[in-house]
Length: 452
Image (tube, rainbow, N blue to C red):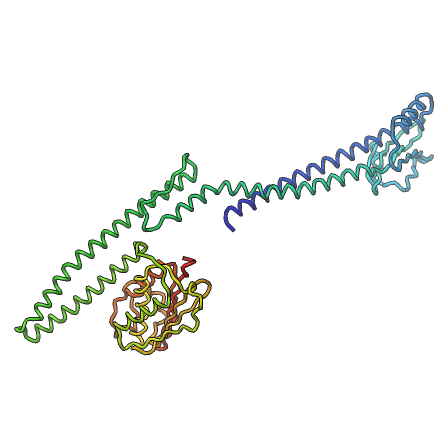
């Protein structure tokens, strides 16, 4: 879940909490008002009943007339006048005990009992005690509360929908500057480090982030330029003396007055010079793919044609190598085996892998299989060679690392790191499985051109 979705979800959750709290307050106070209003109406009738039933006369008749004209008859309204017996006891059967006890203790009471509202008070007259009780039901008030609950429920559901879309719009607006910043960042790569992000006005967090990223680009550009200059200078400065040494050695070896011992020394120097040149070329290529490989020309490449070119290159190096190409799993659709990248670099990477397979298997058959899976071109190279010790597998992509069982084979330990850099530069992966004296399998996965 991205941050924008999290913000939307958080906004909806907060809105839900606020709406639930608001609805609870509305229901609570409406219940309180509804009940309080109905109890007051009952208490008015309790007072009128006490006046008309216990104090007959002109005033009582006036009360009765007012009640008849101006007070509506409540639903299922009943009035009770209960007098105490000689022992001061009341026949209150059918009324809640707590209601009667509160009325006798405090002089008045009210209660809702089995959907019926009760209000009453205790009255003393001529040394006699009376309990005046009025009961009624409030279906209209309860129906009003039920309707209010439905309205609040519908309003709550509608408010959540609105809150969701408002939260989505709010989060979209909030992260819009970040999206624009991300789109700008995606356009910057190692071959256009001179570009800078457009810094927004103001001094908010987005402006600070943009400024920080631009400063980082300045440092990266400086570092890349420094490395580029170093590689270029090293290439020129190192190649020149090595070329001179090689030329002088060729002249020295061409002399006929050398004794066997001198000739052997010059041959050794010549061999080591060639080795040094080879290492230098590999290092320069490794450095190049490590920082400015994206400057290479890119084009559409058919994987099968690329493999055939690699086989031809390896045959030049190792004429005795036995290489088999398995195309049984190759898809019929050409687009599924078409790559987008530098043909020279990919040729170098795959040639390294195939050449290693032939070299470390003493020219036993090497099988190359081409297939496609999940928009990835799979090139699998399997040999029957000496294998790689399991403990050393994690280190094979480190420059100058060589497995402990390769001392009888020529190499410098830069081929696989170079291959790894090239494949990674093309957004691919290299996976290696190996067993001692059983062989090694190298699987290169590269995205098809449509996914690059």
